[in-house]
Length: 441
Image 1 (cartoon, rainbow, N blue to C red):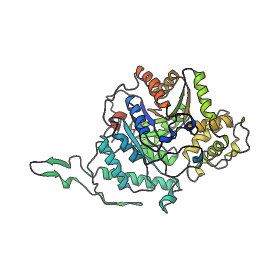
Image 2: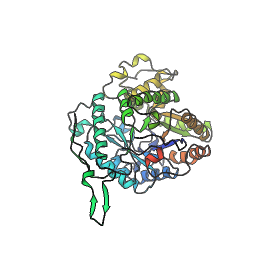
Image 3: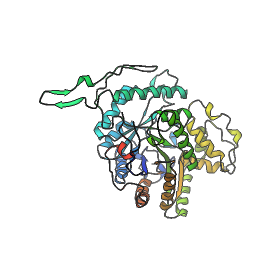
Image 4: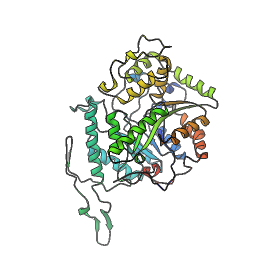
C-alpha cells in the first residue's frame, strides 16, 4: 500500500535529471564539461548540489542503443545502477532514481541489484521502469519488442515477480538472536513459485527486506499502454507536456485509470519535466534561449525532429510557416515502436500556429518538455501555479546546461522556500519519506 500521509502538509517535490545530455548544442559551449560525461565526479557534484538544495531525488535516464544524431550530440549512457551506487557513497539523503529496462533482462537479477542499492543507500532508491524499444539486436532476443502491448505485458509480469521476490522475506524473518544462535527464521522466508507467460521464478530472494521493502516505482510512458501500466504499478510518474493543460489532462486520465485498479490519485506523484532558461530579466533569458537554439545544426535537427514526430518528412517546408497537418500520414496509434512522445510533439506542432522554425527550436531544446524562458521569480510563479492546480505534485528539472543547475538551486529554490511550498531541510531519510509515500508491501 502507498498513499500520502494525511497528517503532513502538501509540499512541492523536485527531482533533477542528471542524464548527461544537456541539450543537443549546449555541449559546444566553453566549460560544458562534456569530457566528463563518462566519469563520475560530475554526477557526484550535481547530486551533492541537489542534495544541498533538499531535492527529493536525482534521476538518471538510460538507453541501450546509440542514437542517429551521435555525431552532433553527446550520448552518455553508462549503467545507471552502477553509477548511482557510486553517487550513494557521497550523498546521504537525496533519492536516487535509476533506469532499468524490463525488455532485455530477468526480474531476479534486476530485483537483486535494486534491493542491494536500497540497502546500501539506506532506502533512497527509485526504479524508472522502461520497456525498451531499441537494442534487441544487442541482446540476441527473439521476443517481439516492436509491439508495445507485448512489451508492457512482459513489464507487468516482470514487476509483479520483482515485488513478490522483495516481499518473500517476512518483516520479522531476521531475529539476530545471539543467545540462542538463531540468525533468521527459515519458516518466515518463502518461495514464490511463479510460473507465467514470460518468467518461471522459484525464489525465495537472497536478501531480506530493504528499508523501503521495494524501491519507489517510477514510469514515464504516456501511451494508453504506458498509462495503464502506471495506474497499476507506478508511485512516481515523469510526464512530458509543454503546458499546464497537457499535465492536467494526463493527471485526470491517470486518476480514472487508478480507480480501475482500486488506487487513488494521491498514491502517485506526478512530476512534469521543466527545462528552465533563466535570466535576470526576460530579455536576458530570451537572449540565452536564442544562444542555445542557434548552436544547433538545422539540417540535422530537422531530420531528428521528424523522427521524433514518428517518421514525419519535414524536408521542403518553409521555415516561417506551420507544419501542414497532411505531413502526419501515419496516426500515432499505428506507429510501430513509440507512441507517447510523438503524441506530445504532434500536439505541440499543430497548436497555436507555431512555425516550423519555432517548433524545431522548441523540440531541440525541450524534447517535448515545457521550456520556460524568464526570470527566477516568474518561474517560481509558474511552478507554484501548476502545483496549486493539483495537476502536478512537483517537477523534474531538466537543465539546459551543466551550469544551469546551480542557477536554479541558487535562485528559484530560495523563492519556493520563502513561499512555504518547498522544504528547508530533509525530514525523512528515505525516498518514500521525501515523497510522502507510505511503506510498500
